[in-house]
Amino acid sequence: LASSPQAMGFYNAEGVAKYVPHMYMYFARQFLQEVNKLNQLDRVKYFEYFQEGWTFHSKGIWYYTSNDHLPSLTLMGSSNYGYRSLTRDLEMQVAIVTKNEELRRALHDEKNLMFNYGEQVTLDTVLQDSDRQLPLLVQLVT
Image (cartoon, rainbow, N blue to C red; front, top):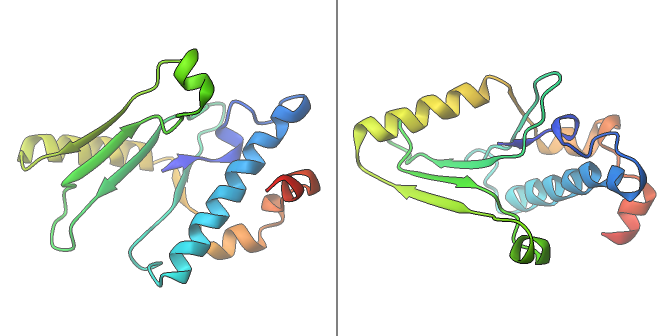
């Protein structure tokens, strides 16, 4: 689950910041193309969060084994580990691996709450949706 372009704080920003959502669209496209190349589109799903008027900065990964309906591994937090994160911001990511049924259910329920505002984005979506076409500047720098 990641932010939709419209739920990013940089959406409709001024200057070069306005290209940040397009860069994330580029990364989503690259990710889904790699998943497709590895023939894993049936196992790996990419969703984007959108709720009118809200921004979404968190990222999450929930891993479910093939025979279980509750996650056995959850990653939460920021994936920002650049220079700014090292020198100015406090960034953190947590990996939770547990067999505790109560905690697994709570993580599952929390994920479901966020996914109420999530929409699956497919490879076809990122390649064909006119709203997801990358500006020339983003194509040149990527």
